[in-house]
Image (tube, rainbow, N blue to C red):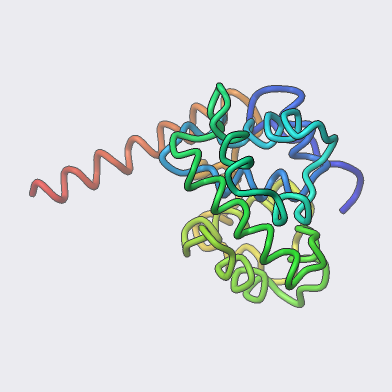
Length: 197
């Protein structure tokens, strides 16, 4: 990785700055990105760090936190997610796995991967990361975070395509955010139509 990447996912300077320099914040943002507005999901790690009084998220600290206290932190106000209780629990599970397998460092997920397929497999083993979320996060790492193991685009599938506007991996500012929103709306409409037909 060459320097700190400049991200524009949360569309909020302090939140995006944390995502750029703290791989765990980026991973937690991706975890929270479901049934919740994308920018708010990726802004949540900054709120979490502020509420914990830290400059960067620490997997060991989160893994060992009292579950009720962590839930209270997630509840806010404002809440860090529509489902603060279950997401606090999932964040804790994610951090425990990082502590057990990766010395508590999110970047160790990709530090030594031989290829994109291996990284995709590791991402799919994370709590809350299904096939689609793992592929999107792999594309995000490759397109914006400088993590480009051999075959990463192929492993990420359509999300890895150059010039696509399918997911958070493609958001570099307000215009691309609008493009991704449009793509998602078109996908939803097409699904509805095929279900109706």
